[in-house]
Length: 439
Image (cartoon, rainbow, N blue to C red; front, side, top):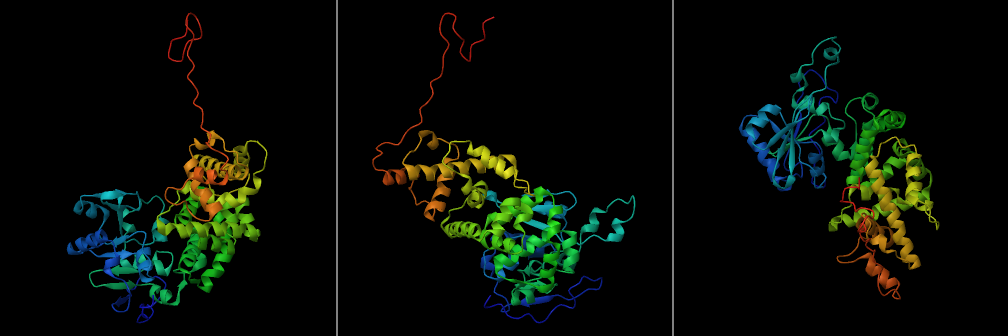
């Protein structure tokens, strides 16, 4: 952001209007964005659309991240071309969605670039007409209308590669310069429309280390209880976004504003009220984040296991009771408002139980052979190293080698015995599993 110069001035208004307003157009050297940092396939899509007479801009988070020197996760494009027009002009396009149709341009290797048509917020007067059929074309709008329908100003910027300029209708450039997150429009009204916006504001402020604009912050504190009205499946989707990358700062912001308990139930409340417990999860998330640059990436179920480890660790003891059942009951009785799919929860619990078994085996010197054959063993080993060693396993490093080093008196690790298949006895004995029963 050192090369990010002051924009020429704020826009005429930061509330939408029927009157046209000139955007701020910031050209070089006023911004630090380089075409070299943009996905070449995204540049090709925009160039092709522009040659055909359409408007085509890079939009949203990609522009925001490029302005602060971060590598964008996605390169989304906004255009005035309709989804059907895009599909006709690109061979590798799939149009998804019903009311809000999006064009996904597919490339080799599984890469997808999303191309969306400029939209506008629906007119309440049009929606209020009883019996009226919605006009599918009425959702489309101008670049300005599309910018104002977005949540926060720093996510409503466009970049036009044809003139190498950032285009701002909502004051996002000024907020980038001031390092602040601000809602577009009245924050109380916007949070009432969609309480998940509270979560998104905290996420962006935490990841960018930006301040939250005062009016937006006051509205967060008064509207955060509305998250209880959000569908549990949607809360799950939002939490998955936080587990995807840069989890620690977001987790800390959610705790600071008292949101963890709103969707993680008792687990979230414990993280909010117990400083030592939160320090433990914070340290583990720091370890996970430091390991990412080396290519060490945890799966979603591994991330869930890591997040819940400090909370479930005190539940383990020396008894041989069904710890999977104990943990399952703890999750079910936690009062979480988000819905963790049953299969994911079961896998996470199995990983947690295995991690504890590995820690106990290393401590006692007793390693059961069956442990090495469990389906989640490799995942548990990865987490074991993060939790116990504060780092990922090195190339070729294994738990078995660690165990031998700690317990050299153990010459051979136990192996799981294979159960021999039982065959029926000849001459009238019980039939084997493939033979028909005696009549």
